[in-house]
Length: 271
Length: 253
Image 1: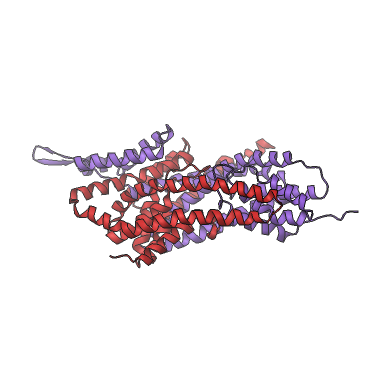
Image 2: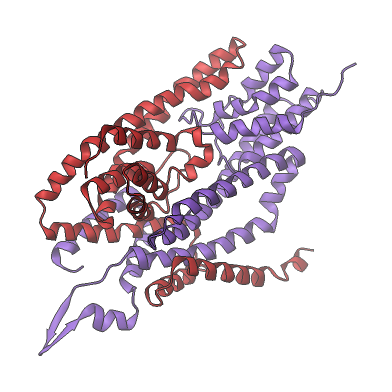
């Protein structure tokens, strides 16, 4: 008669902490986060599989290719832990089932995760804290540090624990519920507005072109553009770069183009 | 301003740490960003505010920085730590600092590719040890060999460029006329368009782009602080989403 093997909250947290630290420690082209995934499962595996061969098989199944966004993707680890617990208690879950769940979820969660963490939260926090710093205030970088650690750690831990508690249902809620769309849409409005705010501060381009009209000097910036819409040049430049980004011109190529454009217009006295 | 080897090495260590796991994975979202990098470099060189201001400027270029699946547009952290150090030691203004940081960040991508390639060997090492039954060895292999490698490919180049770079930069500046420096200022004013555009590619669409124009008007015409613009943005976002999503629940039910 076998007694049930159960994990304590502490085991699940120990496992989380390894991922929290070392998710990208051995990031590589061949299997991306494979060793980090298996590393994070060690506390759970050692608790669930006292038999050495079982433990070895469990580690081996988690050394396969794995790549996701480490914050939001943490829900996958939670689900995997729940599955390992069931398997250790006799449910016939095959290695293929583990792999199916992991590879099936890592793509969609990488998409959502990258959008949320790298595309929305970080740029908005950066824009605000860059703005604070620019007022000669050192609170900028300090607030940024505290806010980012709080936000990212909270999301990751919530994902991990929900994955463990609710299993696949946790992902269905994330992927199919309207909540995530609402959050992304609201944050996108905030983000685009703040990006516009940065334009004024960091793209202070004003044309130096002026003509003599009779005896009056006509200054293109002060006499025409500022009357139409101040900030027209920075706005136009950003929109042109945006359309090139959307056409698939690589960022590195665009950097080169902008450096060349800045050099030419600077030498010609346009700016 | 002079820089001692110890200061250069400290900056090199922080550059390493910003890519390492020792600040947890959130280090990637914090110590890896030029805003924080400039602040820390400023502290090491005794000018925290100047450092933070330069870092903030460099960071706008990398605002849309996204690292997905190991492909990326440069190394913002290298641009942040090394660029700020060179700018502080050579007394550059923010726009010039931004212009010289970009090539630094682009070249440093090589370090990232080297690391990602060599790390693959450690995966095979892990396979072998696990096959032998040394399951716990995996924890060691996932942490120490890649971190020793990362330390070598990050600490050494960053420290050397920070220590020997200022001579090259100040030599360059000596032969430059004011008009060349003006060109750097123009370049520095154009590069942020890339960072902002990269981010807009992700969050900008026909629905949100009018808010971008509104943001430009608020900052250029009304001269509002980013913080005020952000607060207005939160109000707008809450209002608009609750308007758009109100009543949709009934449809779903």
